[in-house]
Image 1: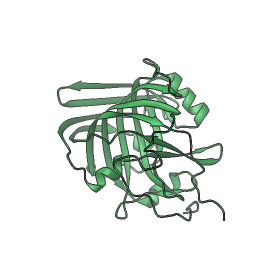
Image 2: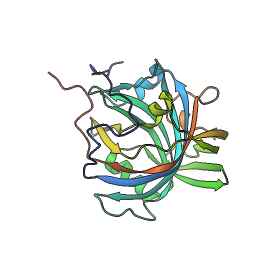
Image 3: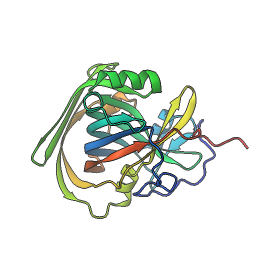
Length: 259
């Protein structure tokens, strides 16, 4: 792995924000994530490593890393503590994400694609922050215990990349497993920005998680993101009604400092 850092031990996986975030520092960005479906497949770290930003390596649990397909409703994105925007800041989103750890031991996620249904936020995120947002025609519908997420990409390409997922929500999880914490309790994201690796921390209350059954999954977002097609049934399917989220200012570069 040519960009492997000389890493410190990864921080523990914790269901609540780590100490550096627990005081809820002034937010750069606020939003809520609602009606989330977390669908995950096991992945080979060797397939994932070339797709991660410099200064990070795949985060693994018992030697395995994961590819996540996460669909939800973004609600009222706001900047610098201002009230969230009701229309432009509220939209469906579906992302393909990987799991990373940097040379400081900080665990995070890396987004390979983020399909969203509002063009202006997509254009701002692409141009201003180099985030791999994509504009798509999307919907989130609930009928009783079944939530259906649909997406078809408009711009930029590959045009027509799609996802249709339906999950049946089940009972609340009193005590998540180690894998369920590993896949959901993520307190930051790694990204490359202007040639530098950055880490953007976030904080939110502990996830309220529910069991879920995957009723349908017809998608090619994972392969469109440069990953092998998922094989077999997902290893984890979860649902959450959601949480309010705060992002703080980017932290120092993700790689290990030069001595």
